[in-house]
Image (cartoon, rainbow, N blue to C red; front, side, top):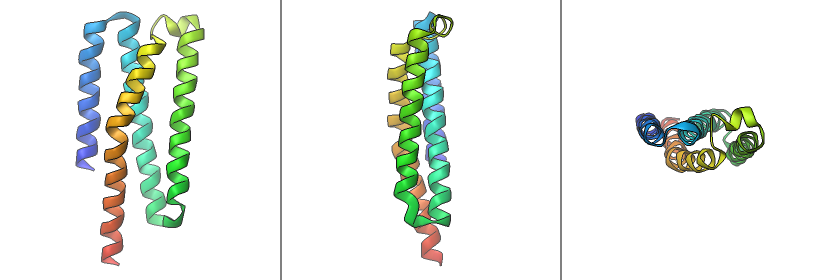
Length: 126
């Protein structure tokens, strides 16, 4: 869990640095992408952890559901920033997609590893 928190904080700091250098709509897209990507990855981790502790036979279902939610958020965010002028003025859709994918790639493996390690610890005690 501590590695997950550190990874999310590192991703957010990196996003702020990149966004400040890019500025404008591109910087806004980076901030939005990392925030949404890391946030949904953390929520997916929490749901997977809950499922592993209550109904471990449904773990694959929880993982697939988390993937589909992230995919839907990526698609809706990209479409909104691309075709809604008010949103596109604040965030570039291309930088949103790239930052979202980068945040998910950084946070999701650590989250899955943390959930699995916690589940192993709890089942070893029982």
